[in-house]
Length: 334
Image 1 (cartoon, rainbow, N blue to C red):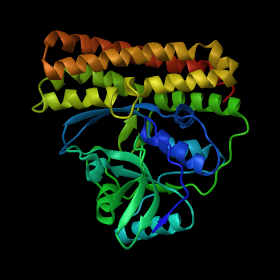
Image 2: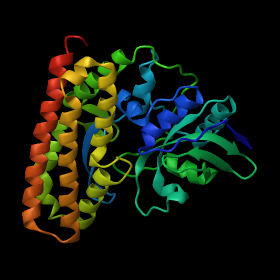
Image 3: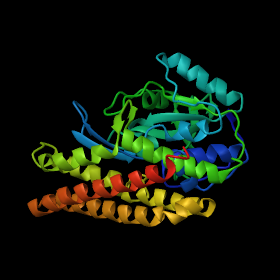
Image 4: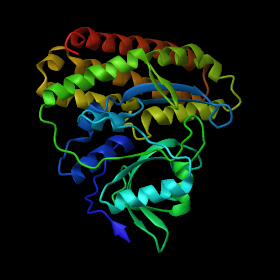
């Protein structure tokens, strides 16, 4: 058995908690919302699945938040992949033995401690130990106070899930050292600009493209959800994604508001622009959207569907204007 000397910190979202835990392992503690914002974590995906259920899904987080956070240290991090399960397994054990925690992307369907009936590929955990005798890995995972375990076979399946919309190939990356950022003013301003730039330009990943314009695409297609064979599950899952699944509610917009609240302590420009106030209004809009989705999957109501379409169109406009304001103010500097 080998387990890193680990103080497990719990939180709201898998990725930002994972970042916080890893930097804490190296001696730095930032609040989770700062980790989220410095990773430029706010986004929006709209996917139509060919085989997996629900048949259409949304996701309100940007790709690559975890490596983006660490790439701001001067080294370019990215999610690495493996084709061979044995190589993936051996490299995981090798890195942990050397004292390095390892970020993993998983499908929590295969992590038995979740007891989930739905696939959810892309869920981030940090692997911090192993037990070869009992064939177990030790995982730091989001809001679990205790370190969780997964058998070798369970983690292998979780890391190599081909579930839509985000098939995995043993995605991982390793951080070998970290020191606190020297200039948080520069970091928060750069990260705020980066998130808005990426969201307006469109950020490509294996999941598809995260873009503010995907919100408008979803709005234009939302009435068609009511014609889908699994329409109840589609609306229910979308509600859960916005309101419940590790997002702090409002599809990560509240956690981004909290980041901006911290950021304005370091940046007078962020404070002057009232970005926190704008994001709070956006977050409340997503709360309303989630509520409408819940009402639709429970009761079904065409009037609510019309309200939902209008609300999504409105939230698109607010998000677009927010990110354009950021770009207009920060583009000269960046």
